[in-house]
Length: 247
Image (cartoon, rainbow, N blue to C red; front, side, top):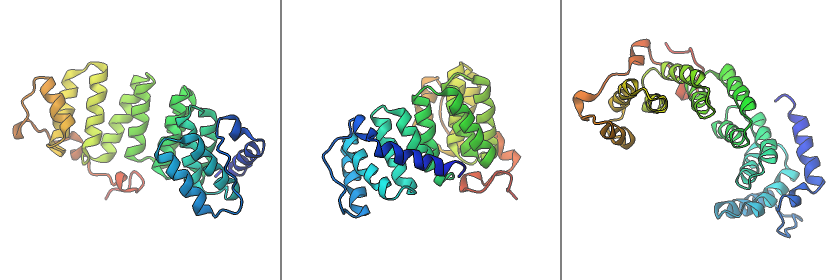
């Protein structure tokens, strides 16, 4: 929640200065005495049909009246992302995250905005902060996936392996993430190994089966491979509990 009051003040200052209209959010709508639920509904309807500028106008009116609503800041930020205004999107997404730092959608949206804006250093710092504060398997997975996208391969490998370890070999998505990583770096031996582990956990997964066939693998019960992480103990990180609390 640090600096949250300052960020909220900045949002309100920008709104009063009329910067929303400068970004193209002109709809001629007057907030008047409309209730908050009407502003939210009007914004949602327009967002759902891809009218992001008008949706942003309604959401902005909402946060002008109730600046501490994390969900509306998140929706307003997503409007600006869709309009390509990543700077203003970040302002609102940061407020949403500060208000509810454990919300996965807010973390993902803020990371996505930084990635789209090319703010690679800020993105890495933010994701490392999330890892250090929460330490969940999903946090390391996110760090690994974005590290791979921005080209820090060693960091990606370390994060993805840590994510799989914290998961304890329970969820196929961590094995799949490692398989994609090894495909990305051209390590077919380890890619097949992780595909087999993913198949062990989710034999009906279409991505696993399609990729295995592309590699010439014969998929069946004997192809499955127990994840090595199952020998390390199961972590409850994906249930929302902090890492390191497995019994």
